Picture 1 (cartoon, rainbow, N blue to C red):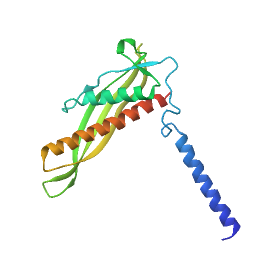
Picture 2: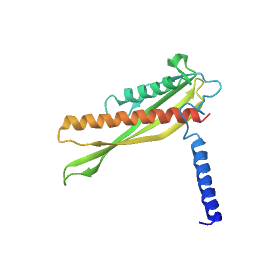
Picture 3: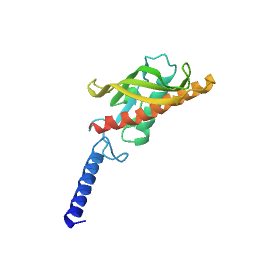
Picture 4: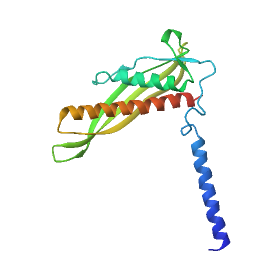
Length: 178
């Protein structure tokens, strides 16, 4: 191969690598804890129990606990009671939908997907909205079994997986905004 061709290939690799690193350097993709910060006057946060607008009993506790855990784990903001918080994160589980995505026969589902949508707001104690997202959603596939309790367990595990993923996403989006 001529030297110009080799130089061009190296230049292309360098450009692609530079673009890749630039994308990774953005707020959406970062090393955990790096580049995340709270507004200067916010040191504490309270996570209010989510309002559950679905028919799924108890998921508000799962989502609230996972989000509290994310903030506790990062230690960027101290999680406190609402009465002592500089800011309060509140919201609702706006919807939950389950759809069949594959069949083993004409009338039997093999896999289903659960999709959950949240409506969230982080407000300073004076009521000023610092961050909000009215349609943050996550989805997860789960296996359907002929044994109904197994299917129920799989569905619940899918909901818990969504909760953990969304808690991390919410935490990072809130702290990335400042």
